[in-house]
Length: 541
Image (cartoon, rainbow, N blue to C red; front, side, top):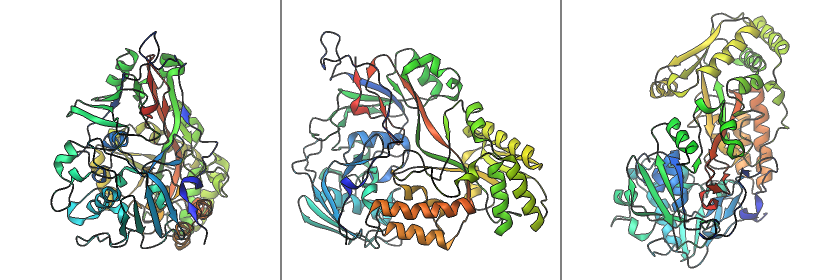
C-alpha cells in the first residue's frame, strides 16, 4: 500500500494564503538605534481559561490560545493551516491504521524534563481515562483500548523506545495525523502526574510546557492577565522573536479596542461590532480582515412540518436561493464575512468553489419561487417560517435580514425567534424541543475538511443537531477516512458535500472573518488559519 509521510502530504491552497498584514520592518533585531527588540513583551487580548491549563481538558478559545503558545505538539499549523512537523521527526503509516511516530532527539520541557515517548503516551492515557472526564477525551476514541464505559488503558499505544512510539487505531483514519497538531494531543512532563498516573489540578494552575513560551513566575493573575516569557529550552521552528506575550483578559471588546487605539495594546484579534464601520479608517493598513475557519449556517430539521422528504428538499433549496448573502455580508457585517461556497472554510485544506450543486447558494428569487411552487404542489404551505437564535450573541441583524429576504421572495410569513440566553437556546436544540429552524455553524478544531463534515452530518454524530441521516453521505465519509492519501480522502469528502447541497441539512450562509488590528508599535503580525495571531513571529519596534 502507499506509504504516507503526512508532513509532506498536505499542500497549502494558494487561495488561502498566509493571513498577514505587516508593517514595515524596522530591522536591527536589537534594542539600540530604534531597531526591533527581541526582548520586548508583546501585549494582546484574551479570556480567562475555563478550567485550568491541562491540554486534554481545554476546548475553549481563551485557554487554547495560551496552550498553543506554551506547548509544542507533534505538529504545529502554519498560518495557512499546513501541518509542519514540530516535536515529531516523522509520522509514518502504511495503512492509515498503524502509525509510527518518531520524536526529535534532545527536546526538553521548560523545567528540564525530557520530551520523550512517555510524555505523549502518558498524557494521552490520562486524556482517555473515563474517570478523569477530560473535555477532549473523545479525540482518542478511535485508538484501540478506548472505552466510554469504564477506565481502560489505550492498548493501541506502544512505546518502542525513548523517542519512538506506535499508535494503532480501531479503524483507518486518513486525517489522524492532521489532528495531531490540536492541543488535546500535547505531551505532559513527568512532574504533571500523580502516583496513579493522572495529571493533577495543580499542574493545570502551574503548567509546564515545551513550546516557544512558558508561564512567568507568578505570571497568572486570574481574571486579569497571564504573562508568558520566552522558553529558552525550546529549539523548534516557532522560536519567539520577542521576549514574551502578556495576555490581558478584557471584560469587553470595546475596552480592548480603546486600548489598541490608545497605543496600550499591541495586537487585538477580535474587534467589537461597534467598530466595523470605522476600523479601516481608524487603523489603515494596520487593520485585519481575513477568512477564518468558522462556517455559519442555519439548520431546518426534517421533523418540522413541510420539511421532510422531497417537499423538504425543494423548500430548503427555495429558501437558500431567496437569501441575498452578498448584500447581507456587505450591509449587516460591513464586509467582515465572506459568502459561503461550500460546507467548510477557505482556510481549510480541501476547500473548493467547484463543487457540483453549489449553485443552490446563489441569490435567485425567480428560481426560489419556482421551487417553492413545486413544493406547494406536493403539500400546500401552512404556518410561518422562523429562525431561532440566542439574543445575547449579536445575531438579530442577520436573522432579520434573512427572514425579510425569505418573506419578500417567497411570499410567506418569516421572522426571527430570539431566545434571551445562549444556554437556554442550546438546551432546546439538544433536547429536540425546538420547533423552528435555528442558527448553526462550526469552528474548526484542526484544518481538515472532514472536521467540518462528520461531526455535523454523519448519522448520530455529536453535533448533528438536525438529526440528518443519509447512508450515502455516511459511506463517503467513512471511505474518505480509509484513504491513505489525503487528496483521495478529500475527493470522497467532496462527493459527500455534493449530496449535502441536494439535501441541505444546513443552509450555508458565510464564513466568519477574523477582524482585528495591531498598533504602530509592532511589525510582522500574521493571523493563523484559526483566527489566532502567530505571536512568536511578532516583533516590537
